[in-house]
Length: 69
Image (cartoon, rainbow, N blue to C red; front, side):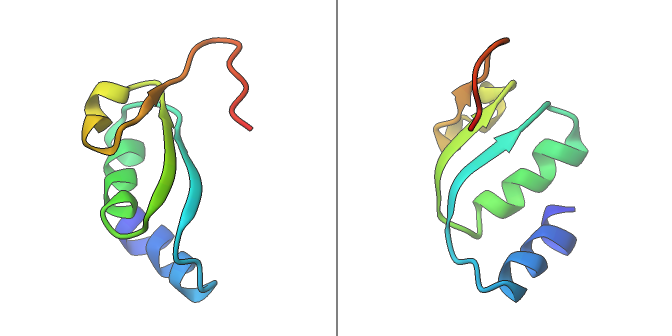
């Protein structure tokens, strides 16, 4: 999803960097696509409910009640 859908859309919109990427959960259709995006687009902040799986990207843990925006 990230490689085949999200990245082409970002390129089409001429988006070359992200302020924030939020990954809701660790299912491969979410976290797997996120890795493709993170490997291609500079991203200032990564928030996730599974930060250990995104440790290479310095992901921050999301907690219940945490404001993501």
